[in-house]
Picture 1 (cartoon, rainbow, N blue to C red):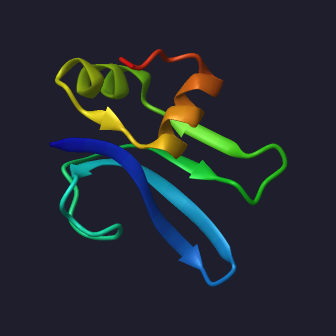
Picture 2: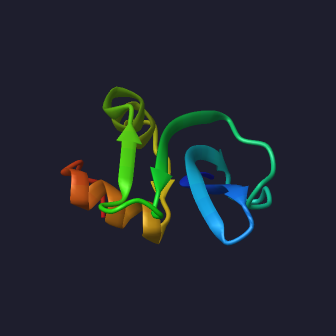
Length: 82
């Protein structure tokens, strides 16, 4: 099953994340299928950059968002199938 989830990048104690579509069995920073956005919680307010078309396409194909990504999608206004 494919999941839309966060992939950690950045320096120690200064995380930023890429929002990626990956196989649910691959490790957090392992291989991924597609990158659909960026999330930086260190800025005020947190910076969220998403490619809406890609996210909606992957959701329509059956990819399930993780809980943190689902909260981000809800904040932006993209409905997920739950």
